[in-house]
Length: 74
Image 1: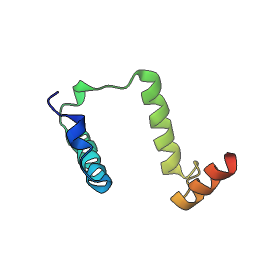
Image 2: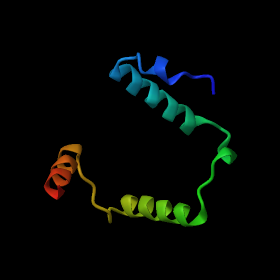
Image 3: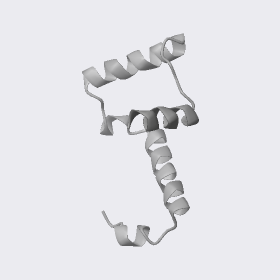
């Protein structure tokens, strides 16, 4: 890999966050899905979570609520 991490660290935090977002987006839209596969147990778990979310079974939290729950757990 030709990327030098010290050069990336020269970017501002917001620039690095944008870069990470672009990297994630490029991974999500890459057509080479055979480059990465979940094992069957993980795929089953993720499918179940998506299904529960779509059925309204699972509970979701806003970021504000999630931060509050994390802080209370400490």
